[in-house]
Image (cartoon, rainbow, N blue to C red; front, side, top):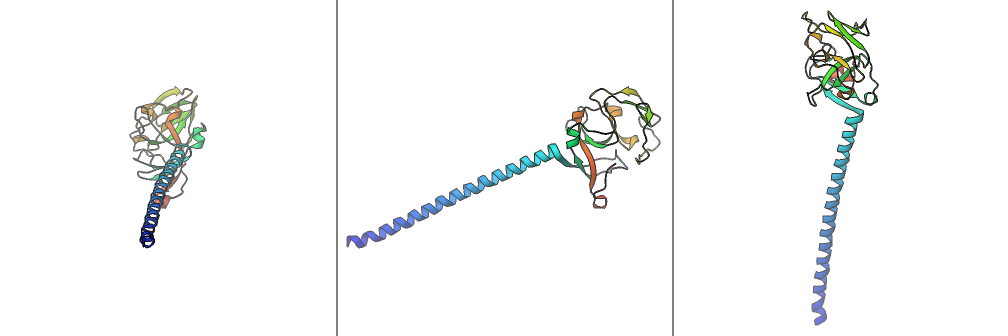
Amino acid sequence: MSDINEKPVQTEEIVDKKAENKKEKSKKTMKQEIISWILTLGAAVVIALVIRTFLFEFIRVDGESMMNTLTDKEIVFMTKPAYLAGKMERGDVVICNYPERGRTLFVKRLIALPGDSIEIINGVVYVNDEAVDEDDIDKMTDGTHYRANYPRRVLGEDEYFVMGDNRDHSNDSRSVGPLSRSMIRGHVQRVILPLTKFGQKVK
């Protein structure tokens, strides 16, 4: 009789142990999934930051200071490697910061580089005492000639002069002064949106 009574008890103990093992495995599996999800999310964030910092970024144009080259609310594709290496060229359209304006981004055209002289006479830009050929830039003016004159200045070793293509309505180096290299974030390459201009090269 004692043997018969002991068997159900043993069976219940085995069932309980199996249930406990399943719960433990379930908990471990859930923990592993959470850890895996956190690691995946963390890796994605790190990769995104690396891409934005060193490779490229999408920027939304805000305002009309670069019309007609770029218009308000367009999305552009900006690359960074060449600029991080200091390889900049006159005429590039760039994304930059201004002194005392924090992280606010501006889109402008790079007009002059360190060591260049810059002067504006009646709206004509002179770099190194030669008039800049801007025939391929569809500049906008309304006849007000906003800051149409700028006295001759030789840029220092870490000074870059930028201007908007909408010359009469652009807050740029004519008022805020030259920018340092660290303030120039990257080179605007192409328009992404609107779709009617998708892939259009910015020049």
